[in-house]
Image 1 (cartoon, helix red, strand yellow):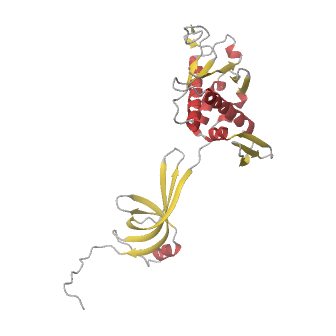
Image 2 (cartoon, rainbow, N blue to C red):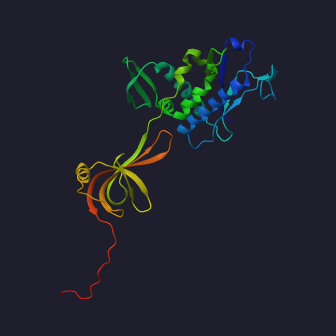
Image 3 (cartoon, rainbow, N blue to C red):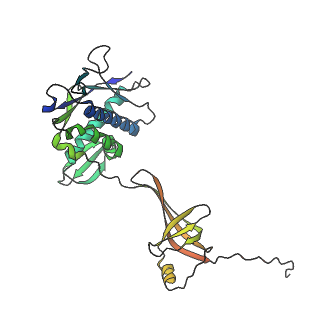
Length: 300
């Protein structure tokens, strides 16, 4: 089983006795664990999930120095990152830790700046230029994690103890000596921006749509393409002018032949959605059923 030590040190006047309430520590450690698992999903989605376990200082002891005081439980301040028994990828574990601390460093280093542009390098790094023209080179894996909403939420929760009185800083140690420190004043920097929409596909086709309802107020008409009903915005100005001048009149079973643009995207909540726009109305076929005449004689 591959193992990589990763230590968290909470510091402040409120921890003078080397104790921290479980209600503060547990959510922070769970968030660190979630952050590593989300980072793993980005880089090695087929691997068994890594786990963040408490490292015992004595054989046979899983939780260290557990005591009860004033009705509250307290726990020692060190943890180890240990992966599942199905993986022996020690380098992957180290990589996840470097990504984790890299995201924290990038957040604190750029929080008061705007990102101007980025340049992808051939070696797997990205050069970021910020508003004072400073160039920062980071791993593309770090940037991907930085842009991932779940990773960012988990890291914010990991440093949430800084919002409590008596906790002034959190040190994340790795490689036995390297560390990154987050201070109480840094905590607001970890707020997670709203995620934008992610476009998946845009396509155009000529198709037939049946009118369900005509909506003049919000500009979207409801159509049916068989079993699928949806609202669509009409951008054909000539057609809309004819409608406004009453040159076009509609029945409930009328059919339009249109040039339809369909945009598929992932919204801010992560749901797949579709947006429909009628670029041109090509033909208007009146509704109402008619009996087809069945002629038996034909002209020669």
